[in-house]
Image (cartoon, each protein chain N blue to C red):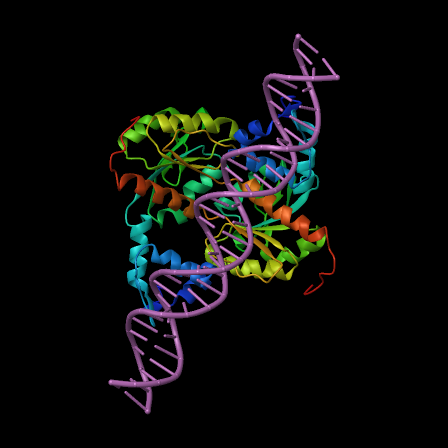
Length: 196
Length: 196
DNA sequence: AGGAGTTTGTGAACGTACGAACAAACTGAG
DNA sequence: CTCAGTTTGTTCGTACGTTCACAAACTCCT
């Protein structure tokens, strides 16, 4: 809406765009403060800035990606990160044969350089894209060197001390969930028959 | 546990491994039936099979990946899929210059061959790894040719008719959520000071 | 056989998220 | 100014997910 130069918008429009109920959207926004005007709606530019500030979009975040296999490559190249203020400051991999390899103008470094990287840049978030077997070890090392936010793509539950945040994205699980629903659609098949 | 030859296990062990409360785990398992034995626990092999059957692991699922950029490549190569019964039957991309390119022994086909692919194989799940701008169009076409389960990696809300399942994985959002918590850790800083 | 020790399955309490609905507050026309 | 129309902010009822806690059911030892 900002790009399109729209000045103001209602909670209904925002809700539709976000795919949620308008009451929920209004309530959520109300936690940030009263940024709307009754009978009018929300001023796009103002609200946009307030949200950006609240979720930390106004500052840059430094991330380190560990495990530069196919997924790591994809993450390193993912344009969606930089556009939202995430800057990849290092790509690390334990595999000796990958050292120095160039990925989008950044060369892969050894995993044991993690501490040096953290010392050099501030590192806010560590991304684990290694095989499951290596994930906990990488995670432990990250915690040791002071990283407190971790995004884990390995299909494992990571053990971390209190104060460390882990988010897990398991690609296979996502497919599994869809497959589960798909199975449910097919199985009962009572009398559902519309729009072939 | 199966691989390690462990015969039986308690809800407590399973809960620890899954990272949830044991009561919740037991209740969840109870929805599948009473597969445990009081005073003993769950028989690993039996429970494992029952879960596999329930979530559809006993059958093979055919998936089609659309958008073979960096992420699409990574998904096509991801070993976690095949090991859980997901078989990629086609890789599609709208970009003419990518046609015929080989990815893990499978050549990239034109997106408009989607219908032919669906006719040739049964296709259970469509995976969208295109830029955001193309996602809705790809989605619409998928729905047209009869795909009812979609995994969407593009940062957009997809509009689909009832009966079609969409799951969204937004990599940037995951980072954003971590960044939000990170900001919260740093901001208030009242008197928390332990284990540097 | 009986009792001590385990562990499941579930009923009940708790907290929280969600959506409906409405008062408060704004705009604009007459 | 007043009134009709619009849209926010919030209250309230409901539903649901989570956890506690305990009876039922099992094993093993004596």
